[in-house]
Image (cartoon, rainbow, N blue to C red; front, top):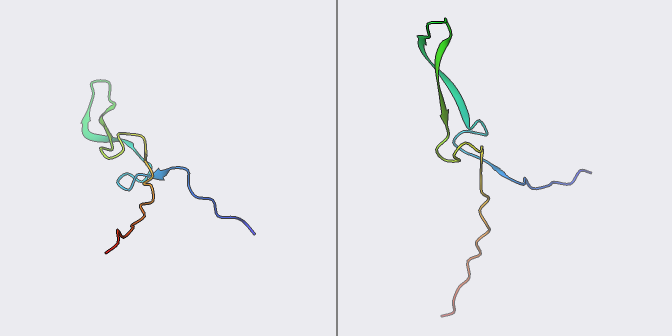
Amino acid sequence: MPEITPARSRRCPDCDDFPSVAITTGQTNPDGTRKTLTVTCRTCQGTGTVPRHSAVTATSSGR
């Protein structure tokens, strides 16, 4: 039976591991190529992953 291994890193929930994209503006350069904008994800700053959150254990502090 295969064992379940936890992921080493967590995918960014905003970009889903596609941190940088090129968007066409609809305009063309003089040589005929399209003008594009390169946009990176603000949440992960272009890495595609976010740090894993450590497990927080709640403890009660007596009565």
